[in-house]
Amino acid sequence: MADTAKPLLIKRYASRRLYNTETSDYVTLEDIAGFIRAGREVQIVDLKSGDDLTRQYLLQIVAEHESKGDTVLPTNVLTDLVRSYTTNIQSVVPQFLSASFEMLRDGQHKVIENLGTIPNPLTAMPGFDMMRKQQEAFMKTMMGGVPGWGGSGPASEEPQTPQAVADELAEIKKQFAELQKKLSKL
Picture 1 (tube, rainbow, N blue to C red):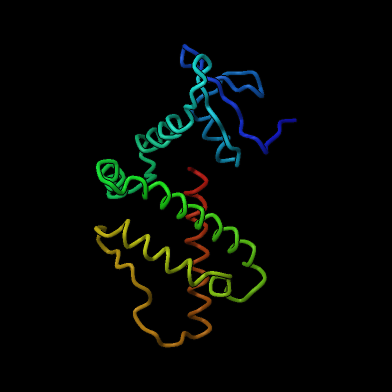
Picture 2 (picture 1 turned 135 degrees about the vertical axis):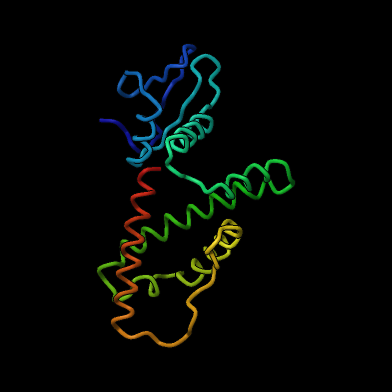
């Protein structure tokens, strides 16, 4: 049985073929994407030089999904990423993106854990307010030029009826399910 705690080692041969060292067979980029979607970490190394090629191949997987029409990142985010490589903030962007995705994963796990145990899991989740503020700041930064994105909260501060809260929760669950589908494609 494979040890899923350590990364799956994939070796790239001179012919550019990718070799799964656990199963002793050749794999494709789509196979590697499947391992990652299943929760497995991968490490891709060049057989001859020993260079770590993981980042290069992960970017290639994202690029292939983009070329098939699967929008992974909005154009303005891609533009900002390219722009960050030509400015002094390039060292901030990777940490910011990493922290944002980590926060998204943590929030997703907490929401799933709390869905059946409390009436409104989002507002009772520990750290929800801080996470909401950070996500708002992130979305304002990343979605600044997208039409229809205001980045602000509800228009009124009036208390909601129980039915309105239930409807809102149902909508959030629907959006959450859609988000999970998109994340599983990544």
